[in-house]
Image (cartoon, rainbow, N blue to C red; front, side, top):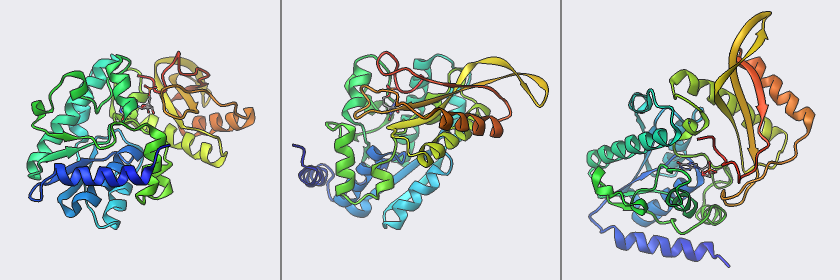
Amino acid sequence: MFDPKKFMEEAITKLKKQIKPDEKALIATSGGVDSTTCAMLASRAIGDRAQIIFIDDGLMRENEGEEVVGFFKSKGTKAELAGRKDNFFRALKGITDPEEKRKAFRDEFYKTLGELVEKKHADFLIQGTIKADVIETAGGIKTQHNVLEQIGISPRKYGLRILEPIKELFKPEVREVGKEIGLPEEFYQRMPFPGPGLATRIVGEVTPERVELVREATKIVEEEVEKGKIPAFQAFAVLLNDKATGVRTKKRLFGDIVVIRIVQSKDALTAKVPTVDWRWLENLRDKILAELPQVSRVLYDLTPKPPATIEYI
Ligand code: XMP
């Protein structure tokens, strides 16, 4: 039986040993349970020698960066938002292939962290990689944004020394550690949100306009899932690369296609689609259509994992 208290204590002791008293660490957090748990572990282990960074890559949910940084500051931890939207959009420009997109994101992500580590005179980068991330990347399913060493890429390429305190855990165990270490429920029970953010929910090119559309649609899906108390491990919207003809305000529109994706899962390695009330779904569709005039179709994805994956790229 997994003992979160024991794990937490051992992880803190280990970090204390790995990071010498005159050394510092930068912790990259996306606001998800994995990275926030790591940030809490680091902050307990090395106090104000831990610097939390939220990279604003332009691909996060609405207000996410401000909320996460605000939370850590309220705990007395050093936390900062690093604005890098333009760099990420530049790195992703023109790329449509899913794996190329993931690799371009990963490269920009580590380049940014390499620069920040140098700027902050930090000795280590701490990140919240978990076992499922490594399994999927090493298994050739997807290039997860936070896996390097396990697939033979040296972090030294980016000037980094990386520590991964929770790399042996799966999501349910991370949630237990997050709870144990004092994260509020809204963090440790949070729906997983992938590192490359909304880019994983855009088929085709990632542009600021396309990200904005999927961000607004995601907000509507998340709000309605919460209101409807739908049991979801993850619930979000996806923007397809295709278009479809529709009629909006009595005019023909060759508009965007948005997919609603809701899944139940324990560890993200497999997932099923919950049975939802049809009227609830119609209401969700109507909200998306009302708020996003450029959308001509709303689809509901019925595919479990496998054969699908949870995200679209
Ligand atoms: P898939 O789409 O492979 O997703 O079924 C499995 C779980 O992993 C999340 N995911 C990621 N998380 N970096 C992350 O931190 C990534 O690059 C990444 N890609 C997918 C996804 O949201 C799901 O929970």
